[in-house]
Length: 196
Image (cartoon, rainbow, N blue to C red; front, top):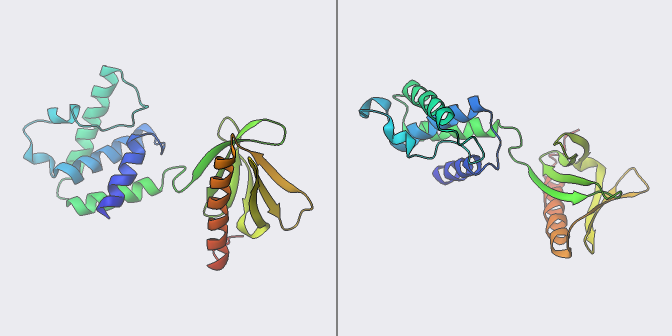
């Protein structure tokens, strides 16, 4: 569990998982509790200024960071008495509710040359447009096969005559994405986790 906590914490701090300011403050408060223990054992919370609390793509404005740090100190105070293991588990549970958790997204082009994002999650494969809105979901039950042809990824759909093509920058990306998608497809089919 500890290694998983460290990984999801790194994903949040590196900006791979997006959180609102409220979620980020809650997560930072839990991380401080998990990493340093109870609030009342410290004379002041000045050490928080040196500790990486927030995702790197958040503001670097000193006044805003100071205000956010004070909110984290209050959040930390609220978690007094919680063990490190409990705080880690609460952190993990909070992260699992973040939008995008469990998804892997890759930049590709559609058949018209438009930049889109092709992603995978527990229900299947999805397409997001440039502004991040999901436009299409191909559920595992609807997909017959996933392959690649040169630098293209090919989705063979069960109930459609046409295949759906996505274009990547190079052969290696197409090969990696198609193998990842095919292995997930096989896993979900074998375990009958295909959601309707």
